[in-house]
Image 1 (cartoon, rainbow, N blue to C red):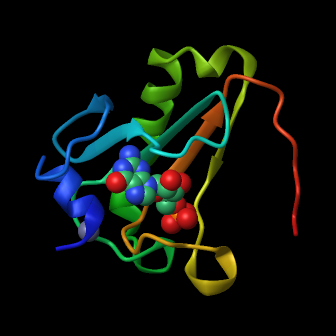
Image 2: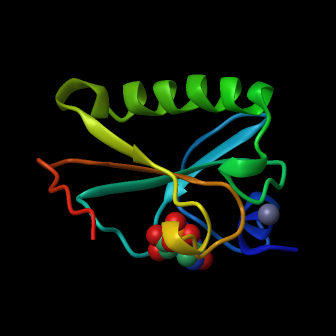
Length: 109
Ligand code: 5GP
Ligand code: ZN
């Protein structure tokens, strides 16, 4: 079972921010911004390449709710998903980085 599946199953502890039947949001263990939350589907999906439109639809609503509840929606935030080798994806379970709490820099390389 992958790392984030273990987090979903509470086999590995995490600092949960928001949870519903199908999705989970928890604080990143190595934050790259004042607020750095990971939002994931509870079902295992390798990456954005494999995600269904149905799961994405739920994911969208979940991230919108997360932004509202954390008040990130007020001043803005960033949503990123890394895909594969060139994208720098380390954990092979689809996750969206939700970053905020400061004016973020934008570096491509
Ligand atoms: P990726 O590089 O795959 O896009 O992002 C993986 C993210 O997962 C990284 O930001 C990393 O800090 C985070 N991460 C890795 N292992 C754990 C863990 O055990 N717990 C939590 N909360 N975050 C983790
Ligand atoms: Zn998984």
